[in-house]
Each structure stands twice: as C-alpha cells, then as structure tokens.
Amino acid sequence: MGNGASNDAGNGASKTMRGADVGEEKQKFLEVRDLSVRYETKEETVYAVNGVSFSLEKGRTLGLVGETGAGKTTIARAILGILPSPPAVVGGGEILLGGDDILGASEREMHDIRGNRVTMIFQDPMTALNPVMTIGRQIEEVIESHERVSKDEARKRAEEMLEMVGILAERYSEYPHQFSGGMKQRVVIAIALACNPDLLLADEPTTALDVTIQAQVLDLMKTLHKKQNTSTILITHDLGVVSEMCDEVAIVYAGEIVEMGSLEDIFERPAHPYMLGLLGAIPAIDGDEEKLSPIPGMTPDPTSLPPGCKFHPRCKYAAEACKSEPVGMKEIAPGHFCRCLNLAAPNLAAREAE
Image (cartoon, rainbow, N blue to C red; front, top):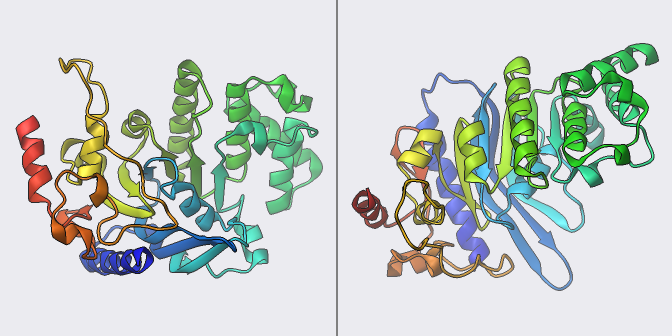
C-alpha cells in the first residue's frame, strides 16, 4: 500500500512540476523524471526511491539533503548507472543528460559516460582508492580510458591534476596509505575531475574528515567548480555544507523529495514540517533556547512505508487526510515546491517563531 501511494504522489509531483516548467527559458542540463528504485530480496522489498523528479541547470549545484537511508545515494548511483543488479530494480522513470535518456543506456554506452560526462566522489576515500596502485596511475587510468592520448601525455595530465588539487606532482608514485584522509579525498577529487566532466556527483565528500580539513576540501571543490563550470549534485545531511556550496536544495525523506527550491527559499522560507524540524534541531549562535527541538520518532521502515504522507507519523501538524491521501508536489512560490496537504499550519508556526 505504501508503494502505491508513493508512485501516485511521485506521478502527481512530476505532472505539477513539469506543468510549472512550461515556458521556462532556462536550459535543463539534467532532468530526473519519476525515478523509482527498489531493492528486492527473497525476504523483503525495500522501496528506496519513489517517484523522484528534479532538474539541474549547467554550472549549478543542487544539494540533496536528508537523513541516512532517505535514498540520496541511490538516486546518485542510478544517474551514474552503478546500481547493484540484483537486488536493485529500476521501477520506472527517465534520467535525461543533455536531452538523452541514459537510464536505458547499454553498459558499453555507460562506460563512455562514466568518468567522461558524469563522475562521482564517493563517501569514503579509503575504499574508493586501489591500495596497490600508485595514486598517479589511478588518475592516469581514467584519462586513458576516455581519451586517446599517449602514456606520456596521460602522465603529464595526471601530474597536472595532482597540482590542481594541491598535491605535489612528485608524489605521483606514492600509494594511498602514504596519504592522510584529507589528501586521499583530494586524490579522489582529482580522479573525478580528470576528464573535465559535465556532471559531478559528490556523495558526502567531507563526512570522514575533521572540521579543518573539511573546510579545505570544500574550498577546493568551490574553486574547481568555478574553474571548470561543472554541474554538481552534493549529497549531504549537513545543512551548513549546503548553505556554503549549493544554489538549489532538494529535501529527501523516505525516498521522496518533500521540498525543493533555491537556497534562499529553503533556508529563509521553509514550508514542509520536516524541513522546519531539521532547522529546529540546529543550535543558533545568537539564540537563547535551553533545549533544541528534535524531530520525534524514527524514519519509516522502507519495506513498509506508511500510506499518505510518509512524514505524518512524526508530524505534529498531521490531519486525518495526511494519513491516507496521496500527496503531490505543489508550487507554493515561483520555483519553490512542497509536498504537504496542510501548509497553513507549519507556515503559521514559522511566522510565530520569527
């Protein structure tokens, strides 16, 4: 029952959002339409992504924000075409990259796309790097796979990429274990950007780093983003990172996007009760509150999603209709979308808090 409601909601969201897009002059470099992904085993089915739709313009950065298990990484892996199959099953949808649907592309076609047009910075650099191959050779390998260059040219390009991310070219022949965590992440970024991709998927690239190194990596990513004009999807649960890096934000909950808009829309005019809850759980430097306001309860079991609004078991504004009716996305302001049947209540609460 949960899955059916999710699909209905996703379809409604896509129709509403595509209708709002009519007449827009902005060029959509990436479009994800009604994407659904589930993981099937003999024991159970996990409904990981349920009717997700969004778009991204060239050179812009979109933040996918949500709790662990919300479906963010599954969305990114679907775009890159690296979902494990089995158990992953794409239930439907389209992923348009430059107008071409890559969701149905063959493995050979995806091999040309990965590393060349679309690349990914994985969450843990310790497992993303080959421990028995020098870091220079790992960068070189990507270049040789996608471009017709000599071995000498590939090495020169690899050394240039190391220099670009702040690592001396002399360290080309060293192995991953000879680098710190922050330096490993720089190497992973160099590998991802070696062929100047059109789209970069960054899956929590600073999670395993301390605060000082995290700031350095974020500054590096911003610099390279401006230099190469790469479109970026940043996956994170850190709203501080989002506020520093992103142009647009999509809030993901239980495999659905529940709110989406510009950075200003999401932080200055939040509308969905889940987003209000996330902001309420963050301590304010100039605040005088004695206690934070965490969101009650736990995220729903993805094998048995609740009907209606997936957030209703944790929402203090939930009405009876929220527990059964499919909830589609509504455009509450130009470019600002929200999935909620009872917008008046949280909006009133937000105004009272101000």
